[in-house]
Image 1 (tube, rainbow, N blue to C red):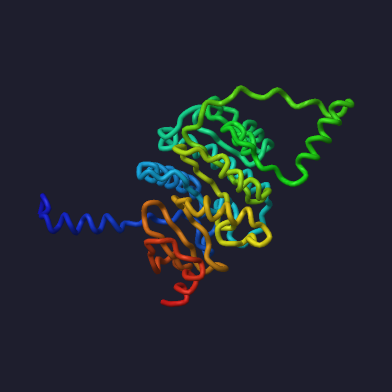
Image 2 (image 1 turned 90 degrees about the vertical axis):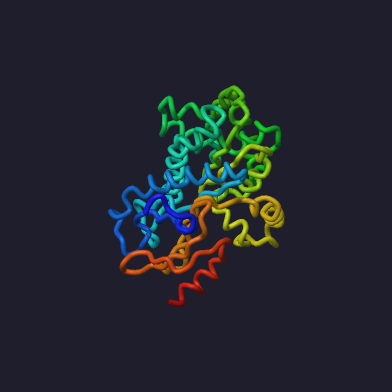
Length: 306
C-alpha cells in the first residue's frame, strides 16, 4: 500500500543503504572485447559521481584506479606503456569535462597534471578543442613550482638539462620557448598516471604539489605499489616515509583491479562497501562485501571458499 508505513520505510532505507554498483562490462575473462564496449564511459560516469560524493563528505585526497585498456585488452594480453599512457591521457581529459568535475573546478582552476612536459604537450595536441583547452594543462614538476615548492628531479636530469643548454649555446637544439603565463590557483588537481612507468620522484612530488583545501584526484597512479611496499622501503626509504605520511590518506573512490590470475576482482565505488567478485563462466559473482578495504591475500582466501 502507499504511502508506506514507518516499518516499510525503514526496510526501504536499509535496502537502499546496501545497494551496490554493478561492475563495468567486459571484466570477466570469459567475455570478449566486444562485451567491453562502453566500459570506459561507465567508469568515467561512476568515477565522476564518486568524486562528487567524496568531496561533499570533505575528503580531499582521492584515487581512481582501473585497467585503462579494458575495452581493447584482456587481463592476459600484451600491451605497451605507450598504450597505457595514451589511454590514461584520453580518459583524464574526458573525465575533466564531466559535470561533477566541472562543478568542483571549471576552466583554468582545474589543473590537469601529467607526468612530464612531453605528456602534457601530447594531451594538448590530441585534444585541441576550445572546451578541452580551458583547463590548465601542465605537468607535475611545473605544477609543483607553481604552488611555490621545488620539485624533486630524477637522478641525471640536472646533467641532461645542462647538456641541452650547452648544446643550444653552441648552435645545437633551439632554446626552450618562454614560460606560459602563470595559471590561476587550482580549485582541483587531477593528476594523470604519476609515477607508474616513470620515476619515483613523480610520486614524491605529489606531496609537494598538495595544497591544503585543494582536492587532488590521482588517476591510475598505481598507489598500491607505493603503499604495499612493492618498492622496498629499505632501498627507497624516502618513498616509504612519503607513503606513510601521505599516500595512506587517499580514499579509493573508484577502484577496479583483478585478483590473482583470472580468479576475480576487487571493486568499489565510493561511498559503497568493497566488493569481492569471483570469475565464473556465467559472469562475475559477488562473494563478499567489506566495510574497509581488504587485502588482496584476504580476497584470494575468500575466493577459495564457496
